[in-house]
Image (cartoon, rainbow, N blue to C red):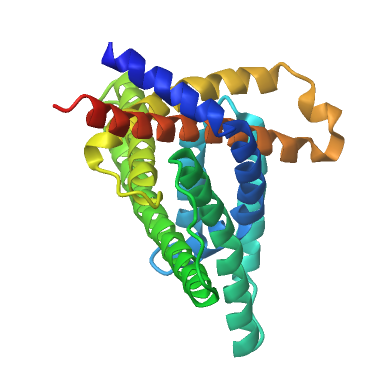
Length: 287
């Protein structure tokens, strides 16, 4: 009965805070920030690995997360990755130009994280307090610093994933013929779901301004992971059997990415609503 109350309350929170509107804004900011965010991540990973290893690792991780059934979306992202690698390989002219460009990239990459944090605060019912000009400036700078640190954190996470992908690819080559292919595929699927679960755990625990306990986020992260794993097949089937891409012409690929991010955002916001409902349930029904 408690589980039904939690899900009912989460649905109410999701609806009352107009999650579709929040998802539309987040999808827009994600598309804007995707290139600079990946540029920073590629820069960090290329320090330790070759460009070929980084590119193969990133594409492999994105394919696992998005799902091979969403081939159109993966193709768009692969094209974006190639453009980013080409831009990263070009030599820069001058120290000031390099610093200015890097600052611009960091600013662009931080946009989506700031919007995500603001959206999660909305789901949690956290409103910004009225502050003086000095406090407002300090809060703005603090949020920017936090968002930039999160950008570097994502870059480090990507480095770990790329190294892990390289290790798994080498291990799979060694085990080929010794271990059934089905077992390797199940291991890969389990690893992919585990990484997605860890991502949701991190987002629900760290990003909101509320002080969230670990015991309050596991249910939201688990449900979000299952919904994402199941939903990506549905959206892949829908996009494959609809004329949406051709209807928008040259912008069709852009629209597909927007729709996928929008759907993923709805899952994330419902998971955050579950975390809030879990906390409210703990207060009303203490253990």
